[in-house]
Length: 128
Image (cartoon, rainbow, N blue to C red; front, side, top):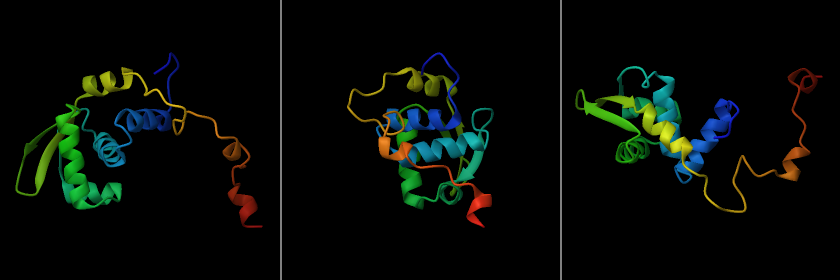
């Protein structure tokens, strides 16, 4: 990340790109952070996480495994359906310090002239 303070959407894009486009893992990681897993273990089922992320239950289970394999989260079983998850913020910071991949096009980083032509929609004008 550069010297300025990036916005949440920018951090989200950086995590997504550094996780090689793994949207499911990114969504699950962000859902755990949203629940406070950076401060204390979050007790939650993968089905509940699936509801938060709008992903399938098995997709979430596999994403949790990938995040754990990368050292980004820790987990322990609480019950048959529930785990307690923590996000390792040092590992997340390390991930964000890793270099971006070398390529011609990075979504969210490479300007797209066609998108620059789009104007934000004003909700007040849309109802007129």
